[in-house]
Amino acid sequence: MSSGSGTIGSEAPPALLLPGLLCDGAVWAGQLHALGRRVRCLVPEYGELDSLPAMAQAVLAQAPPRFVLVAHSMGGRVALEVLRAAPERVRALALLDSGYQARAPGAEGEREARARQVLLDLAASAGMEAMGRVLLHVLNVMPLLAGAAGRLSCTS
Image (cartoon, rainbow, N blue to C red; front, side, top):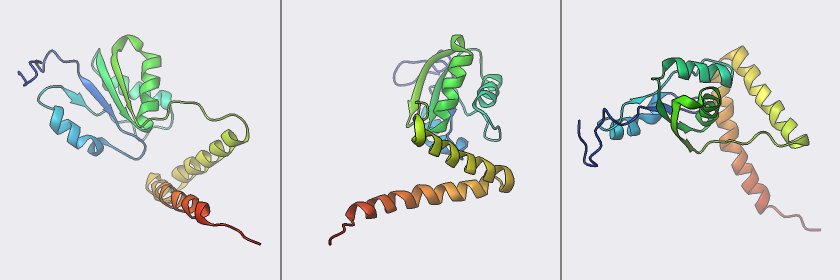
């Protein structure tokens, strides 16, 4: 099928769209609609898995032999693991709002590790929905607290 750009959909490499934490294919609905006539797009399922290597292996098991990776948020970390595991299969990589750096060293990194472990323990004991509610609360409240703290001043 031809598109306005002259690209034939069957010649374009398939694109794997990797969602972030607590997301699924719904997050890519607009892109699937917009790209659907030009590019074969797939959204692999890996949200129930508990490690980046396991998620990457699930992506590879669902993927065609060669593909383009487009990843959002934590999906970017999954994409980097896919790239590490099978670089010969990845034709291109786009990371959208994805963290790519390791945890900070020292006390800051340890705080992040402890906070992530609390979320993981909550997900294991009460489920992903409970963990998601807590995470959304933290993501919504913490910026408000940081902004309020910046406006507060102490005078003697």
